[in-house]
Amino acid sequence: MLNYMVLSLNTTMPFILLAGLGIVLRRLGMIGDKFAAQGNKVIFYTGIPVVIFNSIRRANLSNVLDTRFLVFNIALMIVIFLAVWLVAAKCMRDKDSVSSFVNSAYRSSLSVVAPPLFALMFTDFYDPDVLPKSMLAVSVLLITSYATASVLFAVQDAKGSDKNIGKVTLKVLLSVAKNPIVIGVVLGLIFNALGWGQTQVNGEYQDVLPTFLANTLNALAGIVMPLAMICVGANLKFKGFDTKFKYVTIASVFKLMLMPVVAVAIALLFGFRGTDLTIIMILNALPMAVGAYVMQAELGGDTYIGGSVLMITMTCSALTLTLFIFLFRVFGFLV
Image 1 (tube, helix red, strand yellow):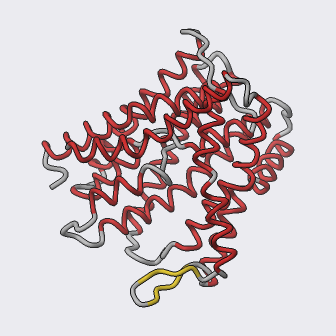
Image 2 (cartoon, rainbow, N blue to C red):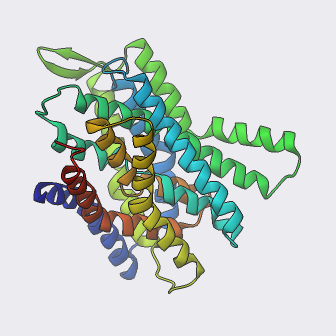
């Protein structure tokens, strides 16, 4: 149990410390709102699409393919996404914050927190297929999360500007098609289909692309986390216990506590047990994704809600993830 807490802390603490650096730099007058806005733009239009592109083009999409498991996880994410969106649209008074609340409540840190956690849990596991199976689920859900979020922001923006159904539909489709993250997904799938990902040579994986190009893409992908978290810190402002802080609290509790419980309950009804159930639980118990905040900030969302939920979930996830893993061992779901 201690190993999981240490890993969670080692994974999430850099996020918190970098955000703290952003707060300090803002207080010192070295960065401000303009820097944060420009930084988010750079990450959204270059960094994150490259991360997604690299992840998809290198993935062995045919390895350890469990169609039922993948379809269930995709459907579960979409159902949770739509349910949260419906409730938020009906119950929230501040309609301008609906998309930011929903985006913060259901988006998990699939590309950063999930891989090392799965590696710790399933490396040298009795079933060698468990780790690659969990990583494939991460890749597929990463695509699903960005696709659903693109629709969310496109629809919410269109609702406020045009009532013509045809125009609204066209605006949504164009917005999704022009989204740089969606473009990264499509290019990644094309490169993967063409075999321009990675190949195994003498037991080691090597990038198929020229070294200079692969290194450039890796360097660009590497700026996402540090720059994004510094921008989070630069934007983070505590406004007191107002209505928006209530939204932050609800989104954080849902993300860390209610979402994994709901996911596990539904998975049990569909007959998932053992490691499959554990993977489903972790995928839904992760903290909010950094990419979700960046997307939210760039598309005109509420940075206060996004930044606050990101900081709270990153800080508390070490405890909540460890608690869920411990309970899974106690109840015999995880050997």
